[in-house]
Image 1 (tube, each protein chain N blue to C red):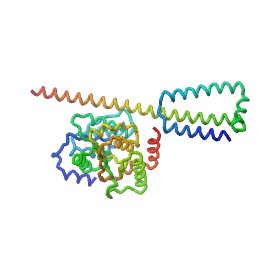
Image 2: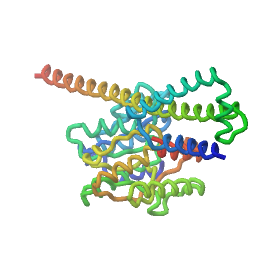
Image 3: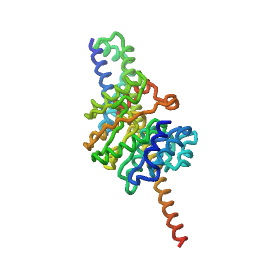
Length: 125
Length: 238
């Protein structure tokens, strides 16, 4: 059954993507291409529904609806992985920003107290 | 606590203020104990910086009243994030030579920190890791022991160092080692990440036997075993 192979490869690919890759313009381009292919494929299948069943039989699945279901699951998984990676990335940016704020405030208060000490010293003289 | 009180006897308070050492303490909701922890550290160290990670129980005020320099995160980011903020602050201070990382919950002993600084100075080590498994003073439960030992094995596999303990919050970093640390793991996985980064620096390191005090307080707040799964996932997925 051809589709079993395709599906397993797709799932392993998603797992590898989850663990390995870091964001790059190449990945963005691939994601955008995938979206484009999905949209065009959708239009084609809406126009010629018979194509779906033909394709399903070609890869060894009985019905077109089943093929659609499997593809939807793969698409959903890719989406989840992408969003997860995006949220990790955002959390890191947020941490860096928060740290900069905290350190800047600390530097400022350190500077102010140093200046205040200098002023107090001068006042004593 | 009794043991820690003992520690302050051995070295008179006034002798050494150690201006070249900064103690960095990540702080999150430890108001009942942080005052004591800082008071005991203050007897030996002039420079203590607490990174308040968005505590909601007034921990920051207690720490400031006890004499620590308190830096506040705008909101809770996680222990790893707080530790990195503390290291970033301390390594930029004029005259800073050594940075001690110390837990806020009172599980570390001040004498151990002092001895680790001595070791770093005497043997010219850039990094000293505290280890609770180098002698048998510390008695973690069996489940905790299994988890910690697994963490050690994973850390050693990925870092090439041969440590006997991972996830021990007591460390001494010379300032050049501190500059090699750039933690991206905001939560608990930072404890492995810091070993990886320090290992990559190639700087000379030592391990030092420390005692971890499992008080009722720290036990109640301790990491759940399930959380080790979170640590593993955080480390695998970047």
